[in-house]
Length: 471
Image 1 (cartoon, rainbow, N blue to C red):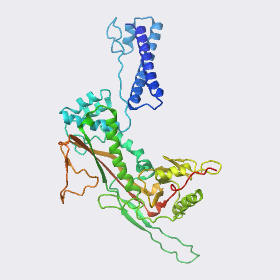
Image 2: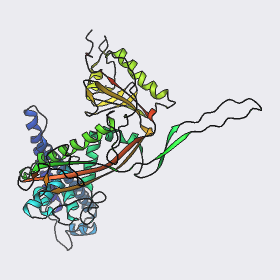
Image 3: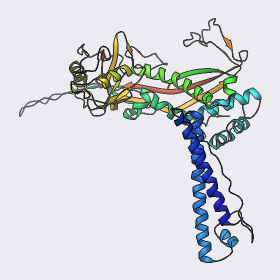
């Protein structure tokens, strides 16, 4: 087969792939729906194959141009341009070989890694063998697993197996952290806070100095201000997700997404609730206080009409501005219900009362707004907070510790009371007996206000009875 024939073969293959791409799209369009997960993966895979073929076509067309200009044997041209398939005179190119490479959504790489560890433990195979069988086209996953020892139960806290997964080999785990960020309030605002390394001492100002006007010849006054020294120690957020082995062994994308989503929800709920709930107090050596805890609520109008809402927002903004702090770098944190109510409110002309905000956030009265399902919103009202980001210290290395077991016994409770120093009788469930597997995820994070004036918050009812105007 010469270059021209190979080029024709590539073009024909490309044509078939274009038809396949169109078939995938037409199926979902014909049923009046969006593409499902399997169709999306097939579409992306075919698209990548077309892109690879386009590159081959361009290279072969270039070779034909060279051949036409030089009028020398094809084998000589190929050899001169570094082809590995033409080492001798008269040898022609081999048929095109197309490689399919999986492209996964954020966080799915982590779920696939965990699943391969679980299945390998069940069937007594190496994780790499399992990965190649279940995900034959996920070369990134193969590469991560191939560098690790085949140990049934692995932990990134164990330097003999996966201690370095958080760094160079931890693409899947870093991928999971990045997937978590936009789905949690703290993840959305973390780049607006003042990030600090753990165990680094900082000064927190308690009171400010004062100065006075002094007339000529009079004594100048002394002043003082107070500081306290503080540091962010690494505190731990942990979650255990249990699943049946049948679920983990079922070769569908849904199983991967299920593991990722369940772990993500558990971690996000704990972090966001502790970060923004005014009632979340500090627990020594266990959990940081909410950034709102200990700060008195600002008094705002009780109404839910636009004028009352503006007056309430102004009270919160003035609470920070009145403390000699600039509003620059400040942002709102609110519940989804509050954001929905604000986005639906219209004036008598039908225009939005608060343009720029929707149920996912946006801007509210000129400042960024971030939404979380875990901002308190109950019969006492919804919390809305104005936070000056650069006055909040955040320690977050972004790493995860992950371990897996199908031999442990678990207390199937979201608030277990036992501990290692004072054991108490608890009913446990055997993972081995119930044919289950559990994954433990731990994340180290901490935060602290620099000063109380860095936040202002209130309980509001802006989402209650605030119906968009219709006239």
